[in-house]
Image 1 (cartoon, rainbow, N blue to C red):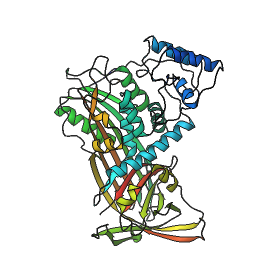
Image 2 (tube, rainbow, N blue to C red; image 1 turned 180 degrees about the vertical axis):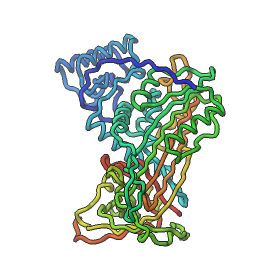
Image 3 (cartoon, rainbow, N blue to C red; image 1 turned 135 degrees about the vertical axis):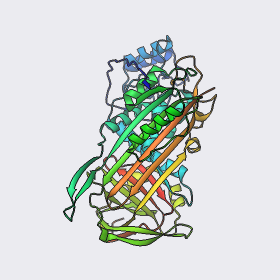
Length: 490
């Protein structure tokens, strides 16, 4: 197996720390007079803006930042002149956006909303659901670097942010995410045990079918995968050996929590884009055997299942308005926490999830330590293995054209002159195990591309998760869920 050699062109860019906000109705950059096209009139308009001649709307000022560097200066006029002269294709060349507080804010908001939307589209009555919105978003964001036109617009709207914002966000997030580490310590019985400081291992890869039947990948697309996602890039004829290699790579990157992902890599497939996330952490305060007891879990249909509950007192009370109560239990290292929300009595879990939003998640994940002393929490031990094909989910979430042969526009993914690829499948598989010691979780996402055409007095809250609940592994620094699930049955 050989790696694709990608030539990266390095340039010097004068970049401000201001990011252009994402809006679904934002004009195309460069179209300053908002007439639907980019021409020399737009360059002249930018020159007038720079000379402080005339008044211009917020939409026009956004479009006037033609090179997406966060400011409007005379170089934007030059950039448009180069577009008009055919020297630059703005869809082929996109300057890197610097990381800023605004980029982090937009990325986190997008992640929370995508988390709510993905859970809503995946949850089914009577079935457990567990997904990693982080993994799915990372894989799709990497894919979006090959998209153009309406396909790119749909993907950006579904993911909740502009492509260059997502690229900068994921690059910064991974660079500042600790990996988990295992240390040895003595327990209460003076016995040596492993204790895991919480963290995530994140990996990305591209697998290209170089059987001689397919278009070559566009250098800019490969460059973006390397630059923003630190992707490993492999070229190999697809077949039984590539299936073994891909599954082995996923198994290794998920620390053997997802040993098998794909059964076949067909000859007519052009490319596989893969993201993996592996999480492991011990509880900050582990459960002793004396707080584990037998109980019964009752689902929304009245079915009862024997379970083991782990009791603890948790200082972090969560409240999702009048819809659900919850708690947060911290992992060692305090970067991550387990969060659970129990819908109010009489509310079915599917109905609760149906109305969940990113804005609600943001508020609900902020612990209320002022009005309650602690939560008497009961958490069940459980293990879930989940897999799903997300193509229909993503179509319903707003990006149908990406899956349509002949309509999808991924021409930035392949060299000029080739037919546009399209997404054939988005596969997602997850694993989680919660017990007395802590939590292990993993996710893998595979995108298969084919080529074609009010205050109260302090009191104690009791929350017993012996009926359906929503749960998450939360990055407490950024207040966002990297995994989210719905426990319908045991």
